[in-house]
Image (cartoon, rainbow, N blue to C red; front, side):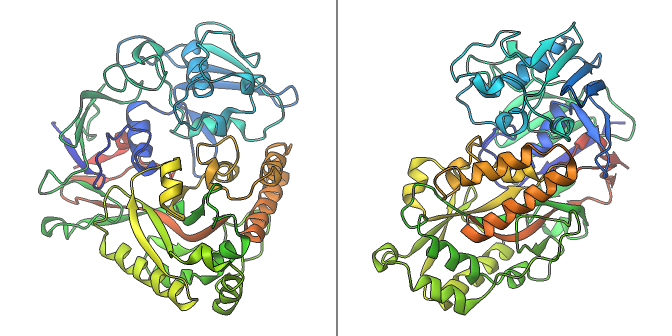
Length: 481
């Protein structure tokens, strides 16, 4: 049966595979087209993916990963050298990527320099044993290292299909996942075709980000439903997928002022921003669920305290007001976003701070963005398997490193302490220390826990399938009627 699935991912001008597009969209495209190296259950139990077997010696910090017999969409069988390349490319390319967050523990990999040319064996901790097996040796113990292969943001890719920067496709994305790209992104659409059609699963997927169709089968996030979509079923993830927050720039003189950051931190009534919705809950800290018997975090909202901090900020820093750049492709806010912005504007006004909000399509803190905006408002991806990944986004190894306003190495030292833990419990306690440091220094202001939210067409879609990871949606698991 011919099942075409129409998916609306929200207004955007970027291809669905562009690294600069919002993470939830990448989190749908990547597993669907590239495939996942490892799968996992709700409880983070590892399951086979493109990696079919894995062995490790925890004491020796060595892992042997065996790849399956899957093929890339160009017809070539995947190999251990492809996995080696896919890990290394993020350390030698000037393109922004997440490889340094996930794989910096590999022995010798941080000695690589941007501009180097890839060759097998260039990293001491990566050794191709044969066509299908890659040995990985870590520089230090990491109790949850293998979970890095369960996330979709470091995909397995063939070197021959990429340009010299190792990230730009010669034609369009080539992966080893259940769907292949039939034609490149055009007129806000990307069409995917099932590699091996499965009964009751989509034979073709049309991803759209410009409302080109009257009625879709899956609608992302806060997108407003049309009259034809009012009866769609709402589906929410079990766990949060991100933390909506306010980030401060390292190179902005206002953001360097601790009193200013503290004023922002305490001025926000997060409960009112959640607006009793199923998709959002107030976030008082960066941790998203209890670990190791943590006590419930204290609500930081305190108007008088915020006023006292703001009074200590030099007037010349605030004379022009504060401009907040909201990560979005346009300023056609949804009704919920308009209401949230209005409430935040009033809350800041209450402490004597004039703010304005403006859409900012730049995902990363470029010098132009830092000069134009005082604060960035966006959602930071949550990794429930390893919360350290979320905190890594503010470390010096991250493409978001300039969103950490604290100069010096205090934050990096706390982060590295978490990574150096020899067991999960010690690691989580170290992460709690980072969370405390974030609060003390007001490094970032968490606002809301955000849950994935989809509307599905009940006449065409039976279920989204078994989606163990709230962070992304594997469209190959969608069951059609």
